[in-house]
Length: 146
Ligand SMILES: Nc1ncnc2c1ncn2[C@@H]1O[C@H](COP(=O)(O)OP(=O)(O)O)[C@@H](O)[C@H]1O
Ligand SMILES: [Mg+2]
Image (cartoon, rainbow, N blue to C red; front, side):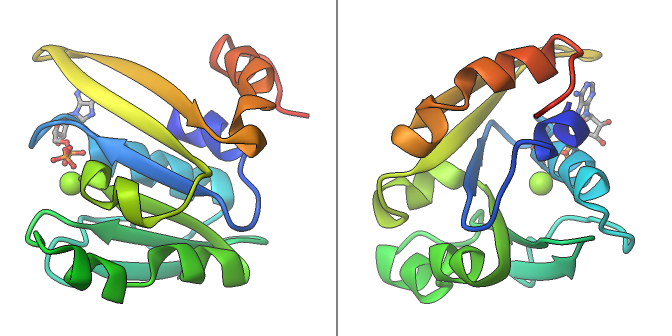
């Protein structure tokens, strides 16, 4: 799902990944990396806080806010600014950054249904994402992104 979702992404996009530990945020990010053409392995950035990896045409700035709690520390990561420059930002524990990244982002909320199944909800925020919800529904049903 991350891989097809990546087809909708453009420069400056911010993706907030939410869900408890083990929900599948990193696995989703690794699918997005595959879709963007990132060839190095996408692993959890828990200890480095943000890892930037180059894809075919967009860079992926992958953050993990698990260990951060203060807005100042999170703002210091300049997640939105990095995305703005040359790529997209994917933020695990994205709810901690929601008030700090501006008006335009998409939330991907992953919940554990059972050991083998996940429920994934997409919440578009701001005009740049609300105009893409039809395309999002199409790619999630197995169609092609435009
Ligand atoms: N979509 C999924 N369906 C089933 N199992 C999954 C899914 N995504 C992740 N998992 C399982 O959950 C484990 C933890 O996923 P991970 O992406 O590291 O979680 P998080 O980053 O949310 O803590 C993975 O190793 C995998 O076994
Ligand atoms: Mg993770």
